[in-house]
Length: 397
Image (cartoon, rainbow, N blue to C red; front, side, top):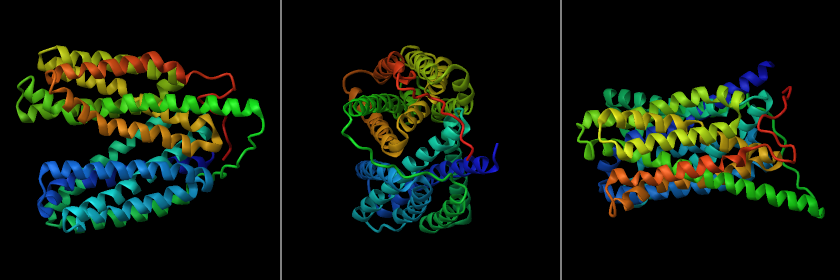
């Protein structure tokens, strides 16, 4: 295997870790920023919508730019942008400024998210075997690094602004130093649209992309619901102490990380369709156990099974979107990632709304339904008649 390809894979890992670290640093600094700006939890919740809206906008902008300019240019620029804008929430003097800061930081995060995933597709194509899930696993490593960095900064007595500035500076260096190892990519060339069969095939491909996006919305809605409601379920429904309840989310997150570390080998052996189908089915069993069983041990096992089942699903959807049309890989990834991100944002809110109608544990049966739909619809990942394959041919890059 060419050293340049190995270096490109390492560089992609670094961008995923960078993204996880930058987003994690904002998360660990939320309490300090909330107190300094003097806002309530409710106000913060409203401002977080701006973060999500900015990320969605960034995804939609970065996708076409990746196809036009290439990932080798867009990925490092997005990494620098996301790093620099991390400082802004730490400097915001009032709620209005914080909202604007989160909007801009979210935009940078969305740009980096889509562009690094598009480059991951290029790396996967060159490897001629699944590697996407391992990239998504390293995103979680960034979150761990952020937690450690936040704790160290607090121990040293650094202010929020200083902490974010140091991490931002390291992020800029990482984004620029890793850029030289990225694979070269050829900007997309506009095709003529006067061939009726080609137009029809392109329309069918786009319909498939939106099908992948709809599945991403379902799966990531489930992830978002688990992120925000797992610990609360353990505490309020099962009566677990607060310290014990936190392990509900811990079981989910640990199982998801482990699953993503294993998913590439399983995908190579059984195919992406099987990963989505049986992973979603496993997740449905896990969350049903959480919803219906009244025992703590069953809830822990259910959350872990839910995370393990979901772990490999989203990487398969992103990978399929990127490989569907090499000339529009960025735009296709941005559609799937964007709709999926909206699902992740909507998940906690949907569950919260349903608690006005039924007990919290029963709301999780909606997640069972979504996972079951994803399992049934997994055939969208089957190799199509145009010859597109889920594991592209090897490139000697």
